Length: 107
Image (cartoon, rainbow, N blue to C red; front, side, top):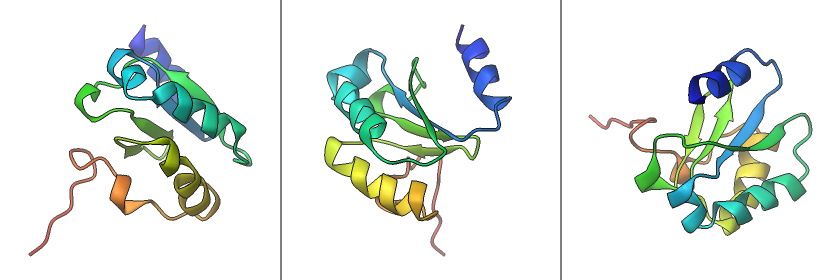
């Protein structure tokens, strides 16, 4: 089922905001996060609830596809920032990027 879900979005050309709606993310407030994204002005981005994204200890997880930007521990107050800076402005919100997926190296 997850594979079918992933394939449907990877084949889609329309950018999409996926908000995990599985157990631990729901317990951490992902339903409210999903509702806030759905109410926001996202232009051509589609917003949908998603099955488990495999990042349960870092939820709520928000994933932007097809670009594969992953945000973790997203709170209701983070939604306007992600909308304004990333989805409308094209600049990732560094403070919310998932550190295991978007690793940063300092030398």
